[in-house]
Length: 410
Ligand code: ADP
Ligand code: MG
Image (tube, rainbow, N blue to C red):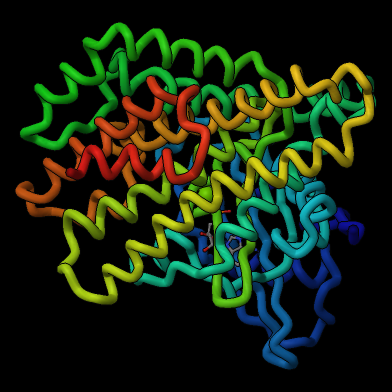
């Protein structure tokens, strides 16, 4: 990684803007020469951080500078800046474990809480790509590789035990985990902060299916405590379709600022869960055209393949990387993998539910404004979420996972 020159203007923290980020790229990062004409813009679309692109008019070279402010961009509430050190380290590690599938990290500057990285603007937000029916055939291969390659090698099954504990310590990310613990794993079932946003007409449905179902609560409690206690692997932590960028040639995974040691099913479940929004949107809100039908077909195949290929690649890696004889006995190995995949199905369920009733909704839902479509679409998603949570141990194949939604839609 490049060294950052922190003398002068950039010797203590301040929030960058499009002017200072150009000086930063020249004086602190020395990525461009003094005299070189540069253009810069702020391209962040998230609600947490600031993302700048700086580009040379001389040769078109560009870099991304992502800065974490002390305050949340959306609400102004304070948020631990150390998240940016965690993000930069996680991104770098993911790049080593899954080469080519994340932007390259050029430098990390703890003073400015800034990560300097490769500009991957040639790739586009997967959520938008799927909305536009671009369901790339390579997605299941690349996403399953990303997960298997970044997750299994960071576990106690593979890593030296002391090194693993140092990493658990470094990647302890309490404030970002609390966001997930509250918004994903508590409030959709127990709205104690009154932050859920329920579409008018669905109040009774949400009360009966989410707030009053004790059997569901018992399962969510298990997933919640698993998220908090099962320091199994270094997770990306926020692996929704808006953190995945894609084009015809491949994918780039961005934004691991929620990285921490948790259950690997959480990452896998986030990927799987988010794909169902696109499916639901096409079924409930898009016309029945041949293009939409083809995209639906491809999406369903993609979901099933991600499940199957992730499991297969984890099994293959396990065979290759895990050496302790105790861990290699079938009686343990098979159950371990089944538990990971059951977690994945469960966390897919919690993700689907929180994006439907929580305040962090997805565009596939919010773009549907006609209540005649929105109400049944949300109900189908909520029901799917509960079915996945409750039946998670019984779903063993990708096609069994997609079947669950077919039954609900039937
Ligand atoms: P936040 O943590 O605020 O959610 P993200 O890391 O998701 O920030 O980045 C916000 C947006 O900035 C992304 O959706 C993407 O459009 C753009 N972006 C971030 N990193 C890069 C990059 N390396 N190359 C190109 N665009 C990027
Ligand atoms: Mg983001």
